Length: 531
Ligand code: 16G
Ligand code: ZN
Image (cartoon, rainbow, N blue to C red; front, side, top):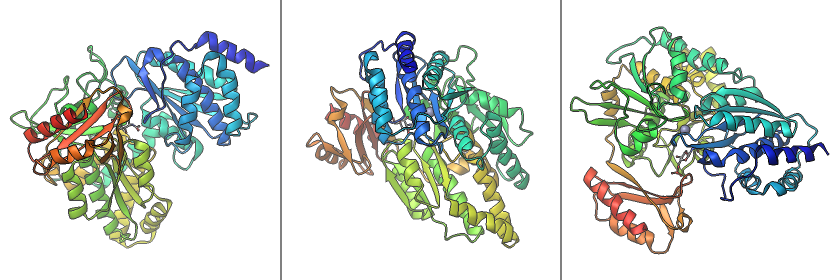
């Protein structure tokens, strides 16, 4: 049959060259780029099957390893609503990625049967990639996989991960926007310009923003956007990938958050706010250096509280307080942020396991769900009821209500609701700071972070560690949690947890306490207990 020819072709073009078992993890497959070609080809096959199961709606395939260094790469699938691949399919993806070339044909047939895909339907797969030099080759393998099962690939070239999520969503729901990079700018940057006309620059807010682009795709796209801005925001961009700057190397959101150091490649000025993006543009953190060059970090928790408090204000001004706003965090959220949210903002908080899909899912249970990981990945999702209510108020409310509701509608348009998006988040943050007339130091005064430390420990088998209660409690190996409790009890405001990483072969340790010295010491002691 013609499929026979297809599988023979796969064996020659994208052979499986390694016997190392590879798993669809928290954010898809991620490993050394040289090990990935057959995996990406096979995900092309799977994307077609998935599209047919979803009645021909488009599926996304993003080639990226996010904040990892250049030699790594990865692939993840995007579901029709722009969300992460449904969890039950992760096992199917893993199975398909690991079978031998000889068994690929029979395993694919088995999967098709299992998920009951009608292979006579059309199938659409949107393919995007980051700036890694290994990405074009992998994107080509993805295209081959899609064509092999007679699906229709559409290549978006180099885009941020959230742009691809956005385009997938738009293709399947045309009320959300136009499924192109231009459509993305039109909606998100357009809403920002719109809102700036309603909110004059006041107080201590300064329109200059420095950006660390991590030498990745996010900075490049901001460089395109920058040219269309007209004084609304003066972007000064660093780490755009030129001048020998290496992707994510000593720069970018993950480096800044984990090492608690400013990135290389940025010319700092005291108290100037800087936004730091990650390699594929789905994370953002802010920071500034003071006049003694000490760094002050405004992480995902800080962004979440800023957005949640502003949206709460607007909802109040709309008299739409019946809409339930809630915040979703993980165990990594700084204890001080959780305290501030619950006690000062009086906003309910849900704590879930690490990984965007868990946060996103939990946020959907609120009318307005704000979710952020401390590492800077997050967004806001609005229920249909919330959107309908706000639209109605924008038309029928009194003057003040209409004003707040129309701001809120722009705010919603500026938000990429499909996934955390550094560019969209940047515009949201800049809008709130501008509306409040705040500089970065005033933003920092909301609460004081507890000093914290993250470490990673290499162990023989990271899966020997299991956790419960949103990763805050360690259930095995036996006795480890008791030991952690003992250690923590020796520190004022101490808290610590361990969990196996979902993206690297390590165990991660987190600790916070009242001083940096204590947090460092507690982290080291817990790491010792794990080892
Ligand atoms: C992935 C996740 C991120 C999570 C991180 C944890 C997505 C899109 N990304 O990057 O949300 O914070 O993994 O990594 O889900 P770890 O398990 O190695 O700590
Ligand atoms: Zn990323």
